[in-house]
Image (tube, rainbow over all chains, first blue to last red; front, side):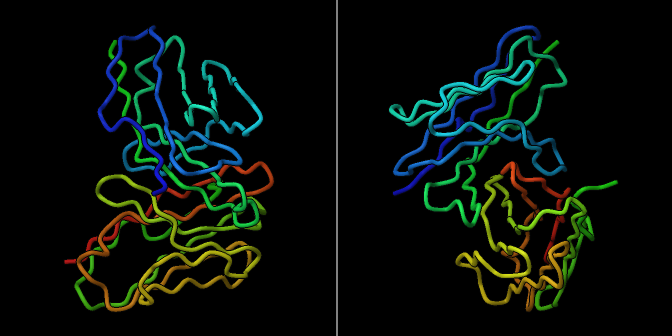
Length: 115
Length: 111
């Protein structure tokens, strides 16, 4: 069956450290993968997109990697801050779904950065 | 200016009632979506419209009916509400950059 999985356990780290979140998928051929941030009571906010032919993408303190062999994407926040505390969602667009833009979401991982 | 706005933000209603949620985007995007987020935080797609045309209709009870009067609006009407319909409903839109812009959500509680 098709699955997209993120660690459901909360990730607790100390301020200043690098947070690494994992997204694994099964039985999908993604055209691309996206990462979103969601704060309580708010809608998800788009952060980064990485395509199937890209290995790594960066944006300020954020870095995303994409390994189609391992079927995994890693999301890194360097020099983490308490303001980075939120739930992070990965989502993929399967090849063949480009005309619909149908994104499949993981269940999210909650990150808590302690001062 | 709010990019994707949904109303109402909260909706508490009794079983059996009919209700609507409205969504408007001012981004000029061609494609709009309705997603449902359940208590376990899974976001599941319900419907998608591209320039007023329905392009995704997932396995959703036919009590749910989307309507898109123009490409900037996508409303969701729900008939005969059931307890299991309680969730947060998100509207979203997307343009050429493929990142979705989400509304702030409508928390529906059926009692």
